[in-house]
Amino acid sequence: MPKLPLLQGFSPIAGNRPGTLILGNMPSAMSLATGEYYGNPRNMFWRLVAELFGFDADDPYPQRAASLRRSGIAVWDVLRHCRRTGSLDSAVEQDSMVANDFATFFAEHPSIKRVYFNGAAAERNFMRLVTLDVPRTYVRLPSTSPAQTMRYADKLAAWRVITD
Picture: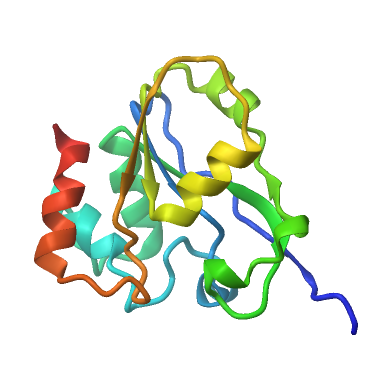
């Protein structure tokens, strides 16, 4: 059986002094096709963070990213690359996962004190693949993916912790 193609993640969204990092696992197939974090219109990420930080979820992508940077929020994924069929985290080939360079990222952004995982796979893979000694707060939030069946209001209530 031929090997699946190696999927490459994105560079982080990060301003000068972010205090918070939101970590996904790996961009979905639709996100990779659009070149935008959370590019699936059914994913609730942009709707949630827009409500939390007071911008329009329908703004063009560069404006949404700029709004997050102004709010002190960085966005990245745990995986730099992997092999996967489709978009589900459960479809990622375990032995193909390579984590992003978090040691360098955190050294360049020492202001980050809180890390929020967008779902269980991001938390699980970060904890398995990344070794860091710097104390930070780590919190898993419900995934914004349409595969995570949870009412919007319940996800929003859980995600409000980011603004505390």
